[in-house]
Length: 347
Ligand code: NCD
Ligand code: ZN
Image 1 (cartoon, rainbow, N blue to C red):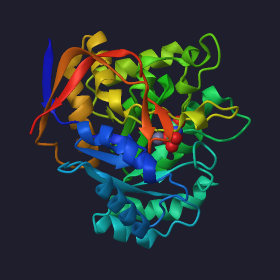
Image 2 (cartoon, rainbow, N blue to C red):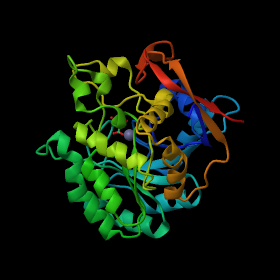
Image 3 (cartoon, helix red, strand yellow):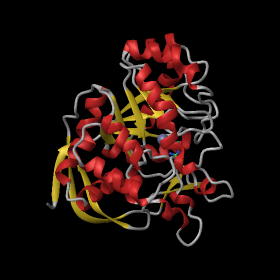
């Protein structure tokens, strides 16, 4: 197969940032995807409907002219989240979901939830109103090894939560482990997981290949090879619970190439080419459309995009970096290499 035409994909997990960075990174996401779930971990975070609406306006202003890309806004859950505001924002169509970060789990999560039971009253209201909950699935207990944080999260937090709120729609974001995959496959209805391109591509060895490599450092951290293989089997199985979420998370080179470098990979420019490569390597290109374009809308109860795209098997060189206001550079995942697929978006 040298080309593949599918419904236009959406990206169910994106960090667009703000200001000059937003202007630098938005075009890559808007060029390929119909819609995207916009993560709210700005500084300060997006916690109210009014803030989400203002942020959506800034994104729309930064869009290339003529783009029909649709940002789907989320709220950042804190210990003080106002359930009335969440429900009103959802019913007004401004808020699509609420993101829960355990406190200190990842970039800009210091406002996150300190104790999961503090979120329970809000979750009850979300369950009743049909508002999806998106979870960063890692515990932050310093006693727990960084490579075990997802598995422990499933046991301590995720499982009790999805049982207690049996009607709540929940996404386990960027699943990275065999345990996560197994949990999702066996879970009740209404539970799904997003999977990034990079966790399908490399295991934890990449972070230490001949030295410390900050451009392979993200959270959740890449795991052992057996977990990468489990993720590949899950996405290519055709199971509708797994869907595309790139977790594209740009940071400047200065912020990453540092004594305490930030977590996150800027993957948007090569995301679709990378997923296509993975599905091709697994002999499962026929399953790519479900993962990229159908399963996400189904999980979130939204229509599939009418527009189509064609993936062409074609070598394409990827620039090393994208410039932020001509001052700083963001390294692009796989930048400086060739990738094997080109994306054509139809009118
Ligand atoms: C994300 C970021 O930089 O905002 N970083 C990451 O490593 N994925 C936060 C997140 O999604 O954990
Ligand atoms: Zn993320």
